[in-house]
Length: 350
Image (cartoon, rainbow, N blue to C red; front, top):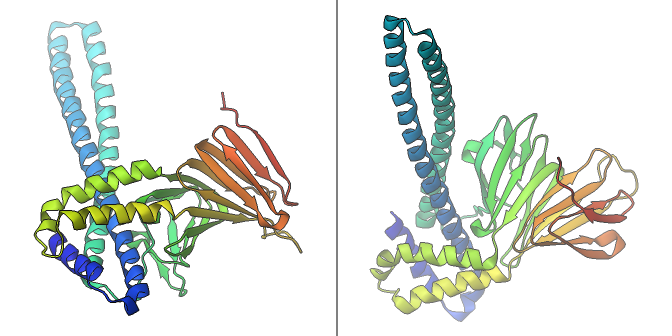
């Protein structure tokens, strides 16, 4: 399937005429996005498989401890050794509790694997058959807990189980729910907290724009060098498949690697927030430009906005006030409803 997918994709990449250059660039952009998220889905699936194996080993240890503890309890009862029986019962209780927790964690990872498998298969199918379609997948929900809804740009409502996101789609979380989203060619991840609304606002070959309408989001964007290394390694894994395609030789494969990295370097992610809700006659927008960093953004109940940088630097722009500032790791920027900005050191809770 992958070999057929890549055959179609790369036949499209290398056969074009000047008058179709724009369409070619758009097609190459679309397919490189799909290739990026295909690798990301594979990475999530491999991680789930690894974690499941680790947990199976822990469960086996738990079962061994349970069996040994039960034998010791029986032997202690026969010999009337109350102290040894008490110690063994304590070990038995702890082992059963650990096994129960491991089994619950395993179910979570099995669910993650199932979702990653579904995403992987769907992207492969899109690479194989969906060229020229109007479907423009720009992100997908890789994990979620509790109640999560997707509201499509055309007004339809979708389940996060089929969580492929197009420009204009919204993701809503409720109560104690959460959702994790992959985007920006697999470079960026967003984790929505409870009672949050997140919009896949815009996506072009030049930039990707998302919006936090309500609540809180944690954002992590791979640094270019880390992303470049990861993509090159993934492409190398499929090298034999690529080399069986006549249009792709060693030079073509290297061109593909260079193209993907070049496009990633010029395509930042912008996160927008605004306090328009519950504010009359005035709106303040905060635009966070990120290339390789980790940070959280939150819209507070008092209509203030907070940007807390955990790693790297975030460029925060307030268009209404023509203000721009750089917030680096360990600092928090608070944007008031009047457009004022306060930057302070973020202290860790004791």
